[in-house]
Length: 106
Figure 1 (spheres, rainbow, N blue to C red):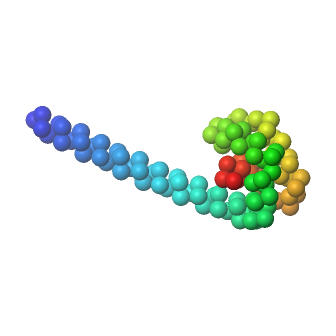
Figure 2 (cartoon, rainbow, N blue to C red):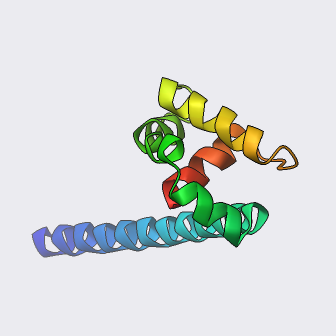
Figure 3 (cartoon, rainbow, N blue to C red):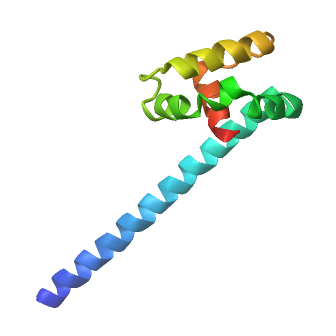
């Protein structure tokens, strides 16, 4: 009886780990696709110029807080970077979340 309980517990633990791993991989793939789309929208020259821009680089920590809080935490540096990016590229149609993710990817 005790061996059966241990075996069942091990089987359930293994199943949980596999489920978590497949969920994590799916989320990672979706995030990677999203970042690829943002990078494509920004264009290589824009991404490289923004990647060396002091205003944008200073916003990385705020961008991480913004993305991590699902848009609830908006820091001053992120607001400045968003305004700066939009002034440099007025034709760019990206949400605040997409730009914050792009800042993190630089």
